Amino acid sequence: MADYVIKDIALAAYGRKELDIAETEMPGLMACRTEFGASKPLAGARIVGSLHMTIQTAVLIETLVALGADVRWASCNIFSTQDHAAAAIAEAGVPVFAVKGQSLEEHWDYLDRSFQFPEGANMILDDGGDATLYVLLGARAEAGEDIIPVPQSEEEAVIKAQIKKRMEQSPGWFTKTRDAIKGVSEETTTGVHRLYDLHKKGQLPFPAINVNDSVTKSKFDNKYGCKESLVDGIRRATDVMMAGKVAVVCGYGDVGKGSAASLRGAGARVKVTEVDPICALQAAMDGFEVVRLEDVISDVDIVITTTGNKDIVRIEHMREMKDMAILGNIGHFDNEIQVAALKNHKWTNIKDQVDMIEMPSGARIILLSEGRLLNLGNATGHPSFVMSASFTNQVLAQIELWTKGEDYQPGVYILPKALDEKVARLHLDRIGVKLTELRPDQAEYIGVTVEGPYKPEHYRY
Ligand code: NAI
Image (cartoon, rainbow, N blue to C red):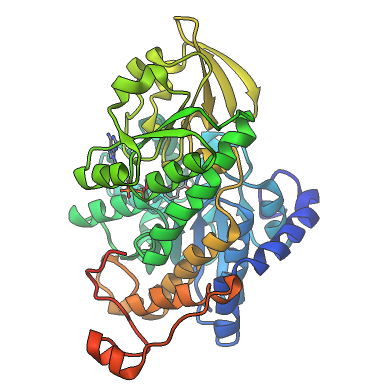
């Protein structure tokens, strides 16, 4: 029986053509293949991937395989899979379990399947922390603990049911798997928060590399990635005229900065909300009006959440929204917008991942991807070039954990700055950047070496 669950294997040829194009835009990953393809530093690694199953991720997967790893993959979001990418990967022989529009039950079942290597998994590559959460929660359940409430409460029952099923099928499986995991590399801000929290509580049993906080990840993917993919998602969902519309972006962190720039670039008039005075000041000095959501909600056409926090757009906000205003989230989880509070309103499905909801007042809201990250739900996520920088960090993190994991105590680590600079360097040629070389006397004057690193650890870019 085929060891995959995808939409349609007939999409593989289309996926492969897009994969071939993506490779030309992912110089960091291709350089990893050239540098490490012969030595195969990931030989023996059995990596569970839980990360949006897109074309760019397919290039990551094939890079991990080229470096010697065995890989099984699930998507970390029910709407983010590109079915042709999943098909191409399945056809290449990598077990993949991902369908765009899968149910929550399928989502957790597919994650479970991605762990089922015949000899057991020994590495995790995570995005948002679901794979790590699954194995740690399951091990705690096996130890007889009442498992901790999970952050996305709607999913809690589904996760618990999946854990129970696995415990019945294979007693002791979670504990054995947890003990075999050598390390996890985590892609995103929200997953990284979870890891630091687990470590603080003494519940992280293996080392983790925080890929998100490589400069070449969060200051590029989160920012320039969203700058391209936010408006892409809104347009593919709605075809609305963006110029002249009033938009509010909740949160002005890395994703908020990219999102506000995206909307401004499309001609919208953009307002920002923030809780952090530093980010609020940045927004103001970047020329955005910084407001409170309740003061502007009745006048805005587009509302976007980017905070990684919960309950940002609440039912009292939605009741005030203009007729046909667009509401969406680009943060990792769907709890930024209180979608559950809309459940007993009238929903009209316009097309996949676009719903129109009628409020008691008669005003209608266009809700994107049911409040799940809209750039991946309504469009195809970030472009390849910026994902190459993110995923090159992922590959380096996997190599570090697999080959030197014993040197690390359980905890959360960031890749050294020299590797961060290396990732950036690998992406210069493709866009014709000519780097100036430091002269030795200049290097000495500013206290660095000619080869770098060029900045102290505390430098913030
Ligand atoms: P960040 O921490 O840099 O920014 C979040 C900002 O939201 C902070 O400045 C914070 O002060 C602000 N905030 C928190 N609560 C708020 C509230 N109640 N009202 C207004 N502002 C509030 O995090 P980052 O890197 O920008 O990530 C944000 C989210 O996006 C995370 O969930 C992350 O995992 C996700 N993400 C999504 C991507 C995508 O492609 N959709 C790409 C990268 C990250």
